[in-house]
Length: 486
Image (cartoon, rainbow, N blue to C red; front, side, top):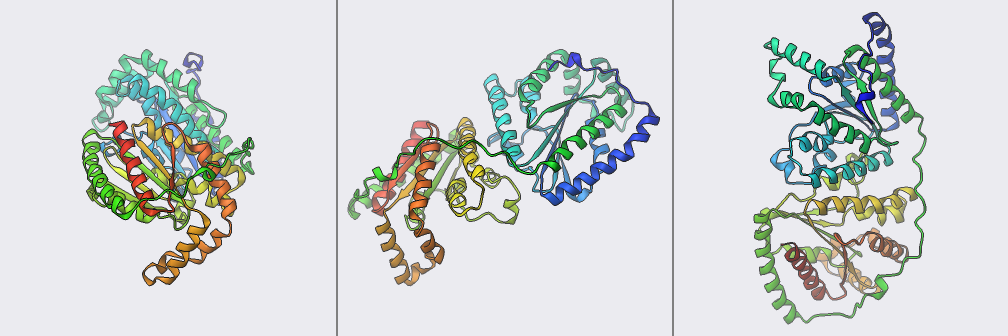
């Protein structure tokens, strides 16, 4: 898309503007209410030149909206806390809940515009960011989010005129910074980056609308008209398209697991002590080198995840790790994309995060129990791989365990839990109910391991009939994965 083709001479006189504006504002308000009732989230992005009028246009827009149903996000340079996580992390946290509207005054596109031009992001970073942005927006729209993107375009001459007008007034002079003048000086270079961004990231599910913003009245009418068209289409949308069926028979990985592997208590205690000492040293090393580590524990009920995690962190400095227990999503989490709650907990650089169950619930419990549609869980394999790839590209070490036991060992542990008072809290009627679906769950587990074991985030199946063997294998695997990165 070339900005040279945009006709910046487009104007609208005051009389026509005043005649058209009220009806458009009323319609926007009606659509906000309709989408709130439908539970559809909306993301509206404003990008553009310095002094192109983003603030003015956002103000014109929100006059039409119920203030209880939207929030405006101003995107500045990443803070130290944000810089220590994948770059999309802070935007996942600001996504709207079902039925709400999030307006972004600048957005994730800062990475491929400002950061690219200012060389804050190197070539590899901003090129990768394009891929991550496309993935991010597709995941959101697949989940039903409406994304509307505006780029406010003005000429170099108009930009200079507006800068000078702002500087003449003491109350607005602060709005013009050195970076603004720098952008003006390198207008043509910045324009090439804008055109590259528009070309790479304008998609059928999240298209760009270039707004001729030399005339603010024309820009306001075009923005509201475009918004009404997109929101009306969202209201009319009845269901999400179903992804294609996944083909091919999945070989059983679990059937090949040798569950007879075991370890004596004496060997276990010797090995545990040495490995915990090494892990404590590694915790310090990853902090100094700012390497984030993400560890996922999945497995059968009573497979020993809790005891395994306890031994893993036993000798660690508690300030350097977090254990995240994952249960069914709460009411707030249900109003967002299913990955939203997990993005909030990804480890920052130099820290470990351990998930006791994880996003894989989407393709196990939610799949088996019918808590999501077939299309949603089939799509999740790709979304999970993309999520983990973004974490790995940030430099994160990812270790994933499936703790495997056989049905006989699970039954023995269930009965032991019922017999021992201090373990009785661990067994519920749901555990017994899930046990009856062993075969269905096993099919789901084989498929998730097959479809989501990647070079940067491989699965390790842990032979867990013997708890001692399982604990040593998981700690050893974690140590080896981090040492490889170090």
